[in-house]
Amino acid sequence: MKYKGVFWDIDDTLYDASAPWDVDVGTERELMLGKRKLEVLTEDQLSCFKPYKGLSELMQDIPREKQGIISNGGHQLQIDKLKLLEVYEYLNPELIFTSYGEIEKILKDSEHPLFKEAIKYLDNKEELFFNLRGYTGKPNSYMFERALEKIKVGEKCSSVEDYVMIGDDWKDIEGAQKVGMDNILISRDEKHLHNPWTNKIITPNQIVERGNIDELRKLLFN
Ligand SMILES: [Mg+2]
Image (cartoon, rainbow, N blue to C red):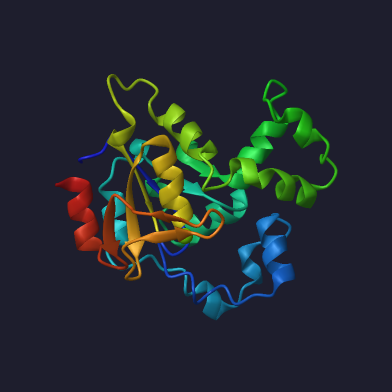
């Protein structure tokens, strides 16, 4: 493999997320908070959780200890999606980073600079996630930094460009570029991305058309 580690986004990167997510806002919020499980979705919706053709074989070919996730959202929800997609077993559980999962870690670490902020919302998870997700979530560099710290343990002479982030959204690419990680956009046709918050144009390092797993494999292995 060309890289010493591969990190994936989940929605629209591993599977087409447009179909299964026709749920009301209240249900979506409860899923994010872990108050409800994916089983609330209909059979039809659940059957849409299928990785792009050939993707699961590609993930299987990447060493498990070098493969992880960087995802915005509820930790258990994202893990449940990975299990439904049948790709969880190809991932190193220690390299699965979610924006809400990172907030829960802050709550357990009294030395963390954000600990005092986090315990203010101890009794209200919704407020807690809402107020702190800006620190931990993409496009912030927070999860990318944690991911690199974790994966680089024991690696000699590796630099950040030895690791790659694969995602479909400007937040994936901008986050990776903030820390210097290589990045691949799963594109719906676009060559550039737009950060609507700063009005900045983001140019991914590499682009693969959505669903073109052969091309993605070449970028990872050649
Ligand atoms: Mg996505």
